[in-house]
Length: 150
Length: 158
Image (cartoon, rainbow over the protein chains, first blue to last red):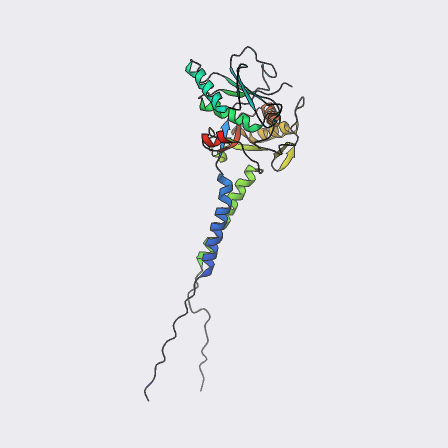
């Protein structure tokens, strides 16, 4: 009697799940954490006010500088009123402030001329940063912040 | 007749390690520790940062940093390394300036200490100025204000 060869059973295809799951976990961790790391953050670097040395705690009236005062309107404690050199008022118009600062440079003020940002104590931080932005945009490089006397 | 007993050998094939999951796990651990170490170093609090178009991204890992968080616009609190620190302006040193002086002393002469301020956009300037005074008292040289970088148009719309 001839030998009958039984057909071979097809081999079971098994997907290796372990590396796939590992990679998925890695991608998951990466995409969850990376947005927190980047988030489009940047830094403004500036000079700290002097609290030691010969000029510490003294009003420096003799220094000629561009003064940007940030006041707070009575009816809006989150608002701002910009006053440049105690003479020009811009309301909340930061573009106007930028144009005025650029105008000062066009009239011969050097970029390293000191600029003092003097916010009222109740002025919101974002307006202070905005004023700083405008001074940088007008190419001023020597920007300081006013702090209260102790 | 002596019968030959055939012993089944368990060590017939070559032993091979499955390297794939091991490498995967090692990568996961590396990613985890790199990211957590950066978070620990920064100790950042959740704040709504002010927008800026002039700010530049920087690699903070190049410096020795102290991150000062100012949170809660209604009742500003100063958070350093996850702990609330008293920063009110007084004559002499306050808790924040003492902390900064200690950090500066620990840092030594070689690497300058950098203060990174992360203040909420609506924090009153009084709080920021108080932190500035404390940092100035500790004779900190580097002072960075953290912002969210946006285009000029977007900043002006805010």
